[in-house]
Image 1 (cartoon, rainbow, N blue to C red):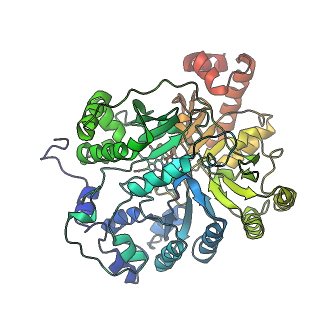
Image 2 (image 1 turned 120 degrees about the vertical axis):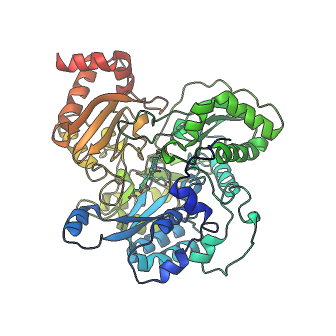
Image 3 (image 1 turned 135 degrees about the vertical axis):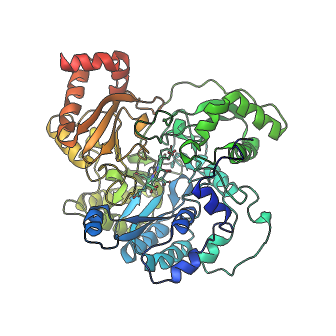
Length: 554
Ligand code: SRM
């Protein structure tokens, strides 16, 4: 028995159990004339793809003035392997204009988020999104989240397997079954099944925690396969499976930690879905439900061991699993720029800084993308590096699109530095309730300064998160920056460009004033002491953190 009978279940577990399959009183509360939801419905809304937030910029002042917080909602869509049509993109663009803060945000798991929606517009927004055959159901909450996969492997000349189709199959297979989502947002009649058949896979209390699945290839780890609860690597004749990846942790709580997924087994495609389903069921049955900070699959794997997990899985499947196949080195790529497709058409990957699609004084990304998509009707793919790919473009349209990219200052390979191109930040302030420091609003300035100091051509993964939850997958970056409190950051070094190694802490609580200087010292030490073709993360790891500190402080 995984959870001791006498231990107290978390509030989330109680909320799920009493929710009548995620219904709670969301429908009723939606009708009330208030700006926000009660505590229980806030938890349930996540399963529907909705987060209640408040404006962190105005929070303190409003509290001081005894005013209600400025509540708004974030909506997250679910787009397996980041696929949508041009038409769907345009409709999401409309939703963001009509109901949200007029920006679209591409996430690190290949989806789109809206921010700043007020409660009175929630139903309309979700209804509209659903009308366009896009769901937000299970984009958040204790279920299998958006399944990630290389977004161009079905069309790029260098790929021989369509992982996008497999991602969709996995996503459909592991989707929650309850109709509550449709009752609330799509105005379906209430369906009273009155028994457990409403949720055959998940049951009444769903999973103990969020659960992430991603598929990659050894020559393209663009989704960071080692950070997933289940990482799937397409290899000859089938798939290698990894389990127990996850990056979230809490500062100064060593019992929480980032973890790379461990090798589990090899399987053929026919068996893949049933293996995944059973892995999910084991986490459902054994995962910890009394402590949210110990509830991810990674802790179950460390508590019980990979061998225990494999035995349990084999018991449920009724056959022995094949051994993990040895793999060659990993590579990764960002899919930016023009690429020829298998069908003779072209795709172009466009860098979107920190995934935020907006118009500002320097560039009109939102307007430009809308115009290009309206005129050339490409399909859309989103990458796990927060970028957008326009697909199925005719040779004769390439120049016209290049001109528009130039006009709206969207992206030109020559003008985005390698330093910026390989960077990512999570949203952090002002929307995220968990942020300890700035990220998305801060990173562009850090990069501007580093560029002006002459570091624009450095090729490394530089990622910043406003807190150790690590939403921009900071712990697998070569240079990771994680917020500790207002204007303070821990600096980590030593991941690799391919995302197969965790970085380590280099310096704690660096102030935002000193951060660029600290990074510059690291880059200078790297330039002076690196071996030919040695990446920044590999250099830091070879030299070791202790020697790196000595080198810098000599
Ligand atoms: Fe995340 C929670 C944003 C990818 C680990 N994440 C949050 C919330 C919802 C804050 C909250 O719970 O109130 C953030 C909303 C901010 C906002 O204003 O939008 C948030 N996470 C994001 C996104 C939008 C970051 C981005 O820059 O794109 C990503 C949405 C992905 C998606 O489309 O589904 C996002 N989050 C990740 C990743 C990276 C990944 O999955 O590849 C991680 C690390 C991997 C992992 O899960 O271990 C991640 N987010 C977390 C955690 C820590 C989980 C843990 O195990 O401790 C939290 C907090 C939690 O779950 O309690 C969190």
